[in-house]
Image (tube, rainbow, N blue to C red; front, side, top):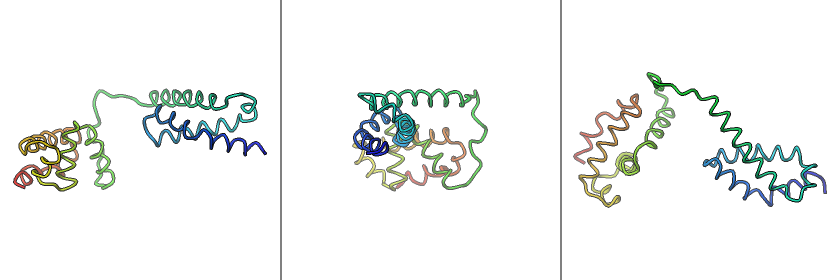
Amino acid sequence: MDRNDDFREFVAAHQQSLMRTAYLLTGDPHQAEDLLQTVLLKVLGRWNRLTRLERPEAYARKALVNQHISWRRRRVRNELPTAEPPDRPYASEDPLLVRLVMRQALMRLAPRQRAVIVLRFYEDRTERETAELLNCSIGTVKSQTHYALARLRDLAPDLAPKLAGLEPEEANR
C-alpha cells in the first residue's frame, strides 16, 4: 500500500466528521468545502510525518480551526468599513445582479415580512392565501407587505423603480 492509498483511506474514514467540523466553523457549506479541501491538501503534504502519529485526524481537525482563523483574519484585514455607503451600489440592469441585490435585501427583512413578500410576489399568492398560509389576518398581510416594501426600498434604493407600483395595484387582489 502506498502513501496515497493510506491517505485515501484516511479521507474516506474521516471526511464526514471533518466536513461537519468545517461547516460548524464557517456556517456556510461552500466555505466549509473550501476549508476542508485546503486543509486536506496541507495534510497530504505532511502525510509521511502524520502517519507516525496515533491520531492524524486530530491534527487535521486542529488544522481546520487554524486555517479558519487565518481566513477570518485575512478577510477582516481586507475589508475596509466606510461611514457612508456608496452612492449607487450598482449601475446595471443585469438581471442576475438585480436578483442578487434583491436576495440580499430580502435576507435583511424580518422573517414575517420576508415570508409575506415571497408568498405575495414570488409565489404570486393572493392576500387571502398568504393570510391562510401565515395564519394571520388579511390586514396583517397588507400592513406587513407595506412595511416590507418600504424596507426593501430603503435597503436597495436602485430597486425602488422595480418595486414602485406593487402596493397600490396589488392591494385589491
